[in-house]
Length: 91
Figure 1 (cartoon, one colour):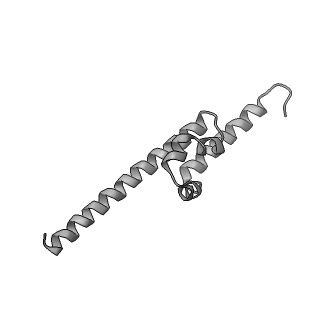
Figure 2 (tube, rainbow, N blue to C red):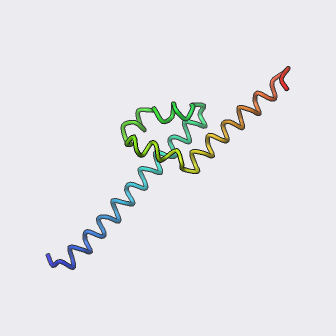
Figure 3 (cartoon, one colour):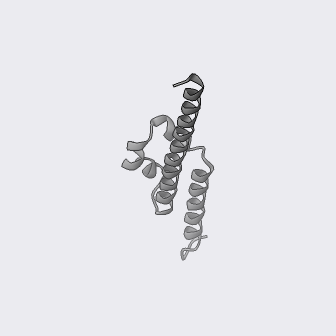
C-alpha cells in the first residue's frame, strides 16, 4: 500500500477511534447525571459498577469538571433545599 494511502487510512482510523471515545464518554456522563437525578449522590453514581468497569481513575477525576455533572449536582442540591424548606415547621 502506498505511503500516502496509509496516512489517509490511519487518519480515518484515528477519527473513528476519537468518535468512539466521545460516544462512550457521552454515555458515561448521561448515566452519571441520570443516577444523580434518581437520588444517588455523586459518589454513589461514580462508584457504580458500570462506571468503574468502563472508565479509568483519571477519567473519573477529569469528568467532575464537566458542566453536565456540575449542573446535575446543583439541581439536586437545589431540589433538596426546596424540599427541606417546604417541610412543616421549617424555616
